[in-house]
Image 1 (cartoon, rainbow, N blue to C red):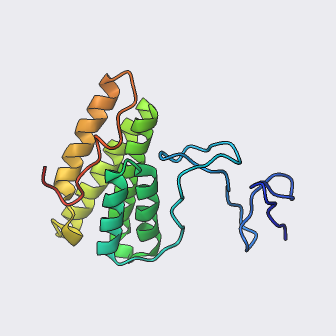
Image 2: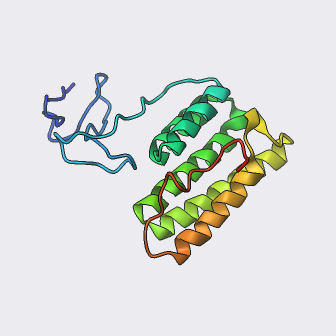
Length: 175
């Protein structure tokens, strides 16, 4: 088993590892999740594998989205997707796709941003229709789908990255 050196690198040929030896990138990241050089101050990362109540997931993700950190919100949704009940995984995965779509749009990745926003919109709509639950945990899937498709259109028409704070969705709907 290898150990990680103090500079964020590792002594096993360059791969960062966690305490259990799993590969983990220890590079600092900016607010949109982009890697920064080792030794640079970055934005604190979301802990991985946190099991939260669904209402707490929604609240934490909304706070991160509002702060302009959609990459971090995506990680919160990913935790719910991986730890939640089988019947809800498609919902949380769709929400994660919306957040990472906003991340790509804010990074200026037109194709990836638009594609993920549309995929996430379809996923949350489909989950809501199949489940018969129109507002799970207070979420507004129909409004989120409208938001995501509108942003995808903006991203495809624009020539610059969008502002993640300005475009942050309201997960529970409303203006």
